[in-house]
Image 1: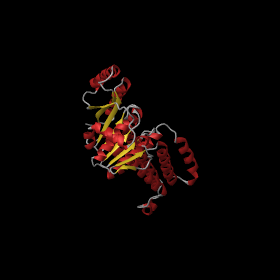
Image 2: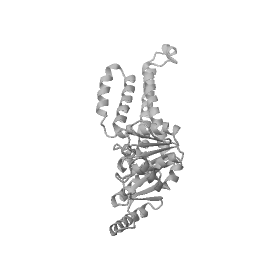
Image 3: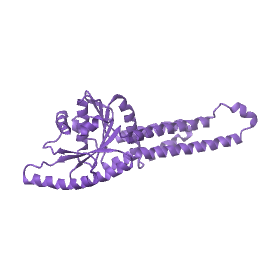
Image 4: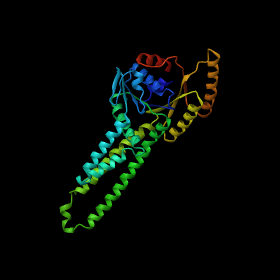
Length: 326
């Protein structure tokens, strides 16, 4: 089920409560598709990265080749924010007089830890990864942060698109007003000399609009891709326990409101029904929790993966785990 879904999508997001095995399931899916001949990029957006531990090797913010068809990278929030702030500061320095650069630097330092700054920077980086990654890969798999963080991140493209669109409209309105004022103060005898030439102020305003438009197009492009059901799917990974089940239902509702399509639920670490009395009782209790999941999300396909006796670490163990996804 899961591999069939991955074979028919270009973007596949894995989310869910922390500790349920999102990283293992997403990495196994990416590896299985790569072994089947697809070119796959696996990306972690979780600040507490685990891909390096899972593959038992160092992975950073630049793609690392794990197998012939699988590249892996981890988005570093701190590094992403630093690069974002440098880009914004550089643009502001180009637009504003040198005398104001000190104030700009001070404002940017204060803004670095502002609420939402990290999410906005990560979102821009995701948009870039999607845009460039799809040029060289058939599938991009995202291993996301725990539910609350991911729900906010998935809602951001729409919010940021609307916010940037508002800035552009206000900028255009201010520009039209400035043009009107300049025309009032322009001597008619000088009008011929000014036709076809832009003042430094007009050039600056044009560059501001260009920057805002590039930003808007980036967010709109990501928003449209996320909402495209033929291109993007979201998989929620959970454990058959009360809190993960309740959090899954809540995450599903939030994703639905933002236009994100959830096509699969993966119940990970399911206790075997056979064995000692403890295992049988545990399996029966899990079945009771899954009844609630069935009542709320009956239409979403579900796949169950049994609890492993050992940790899944390294390429060989991950390939063995991936066989259960068929």
